[in-house]
Image 1 (tube, rainbow, N blue to C red):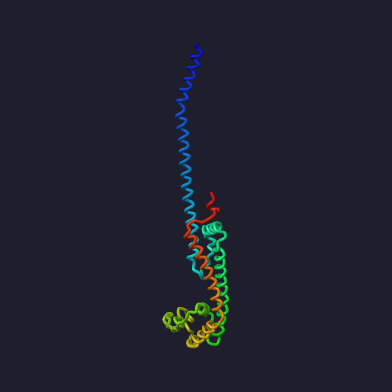
Image 2: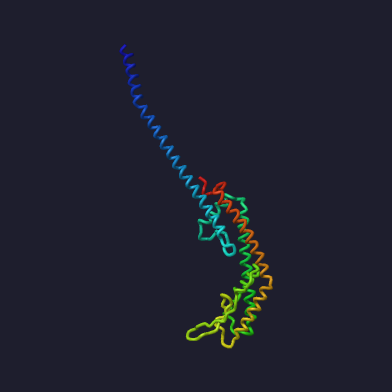
Length: 259
């Protein structure tokens, strides 16, 4: 009898101890689950914020393509010092590997390179023509740089624009205590100063003859063809970028957004 009562008392004590311990154990599990849920919510919030900023970075970079000057800034965004732009450009390509944007951008870059090559060839040819034309009038032709102004002529011809604003001016130039004569065409200084004994009118006639030859030459046609390529490629880039900006979200993933 005594043993049965003893065993019964021990079981009651065990149940009492278990009853006292159970609320604390449940509370511990609840607290652990709460902290884990909060951590997941924080991680999820940070991930959403990171993805939002990542998309904003990519769309900002895409917008830079729209803002590039169509004739002078090659839209490569791969400047050696601009590591961020290079990484973002690669990321944007990973998100949109089959977008017409990339082919159009390459065409744009190629056309600008071709225009630069055309300009280089033009400058070398017409600078040589200018020096040869001045041989009988100007003894020292080392300071003559007429190619840049003649390129303007070819560029205007390519765009079917007039040269009415480009007028010749004979200017008095102060050099120390003396006044020397100079010859300008629009904003271009053709010669400053004109050496004594050299006819300013003869210089002007030579330049007018070169302008007429450039206007009648093939350079304007070649420039116009390259400009059309740039315009067409730029239009595709603008359209694709505008669609990206309107969508706001990009498909796929890249090395910068994979988690």
